[in-house]
Length: 333
Image (cartoon, rainbow, N blue to C red):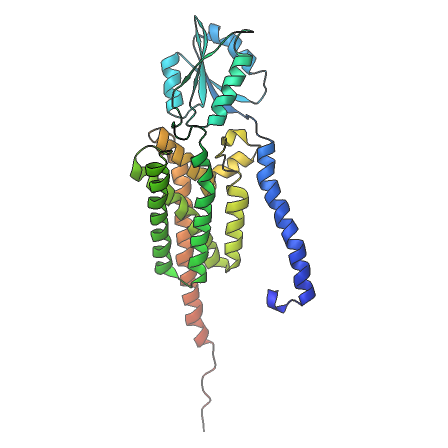
């Protein structure tokens, strides 16, 4: 039932009930993952001879379900695994005691958690664990605040672009051109701020700009595509999925493996989570593990733009078929 057909009392009741429901959903979406942050099958390497690493592995496995342990022959292999984003860190067993390899660029929160966990679980009481940050976060942004806070502006930009294309009546190829052009400019502007000015997202400037642009396009195309298929309600549906599911489930502030199940997995299938993962890979790890999130964003963009074109084709077919059903003029005898 359209809002214009509702009586004033029903409109008041709808607003009165709708706002608390939205607040409850938002609180659940953002507060639930934050309040349940803990490692869940977090990939962690253990390097050294099997006999030497066995006690370390046993201590770490006491935290059931916390770590997904990977064994490596030596420190060099463990370093390579960290740099390739196979694991978030690794415990190397040496003659002088355990050494911890971390990658704060992958997640400062996880790096700190590993230091605490390995110190308490893998070392002797009162002992010290030497820590080496293999892939450090940038000095200008050691806590990853810029990358974390970039999720919301990109989501808003994508939703805004998708809504604008719909409300301005752009269809077909014109809508696709507007969405692509907007995303490209978002990528250039965002890279200029985060890469050039704040120096918080290193790596190749154009690769970073392309990542931002692809993330924005995936969101805007999804919103515009839904709207092209189901009408303006698609804007609300797309905004709901991106803002209240994709944003808090992205794992940007920690890691997908730190979120309660299945939030982390769901987040990586949505544009915000895939965008953050791709940006980390491109910025800090020379593109390691970038294929998965890049493919996810590409599919969202392709399906969304395809829906925009399909919606135009369906409207044209409906418009062409309508006159054929109208009765012709009566013949005068």
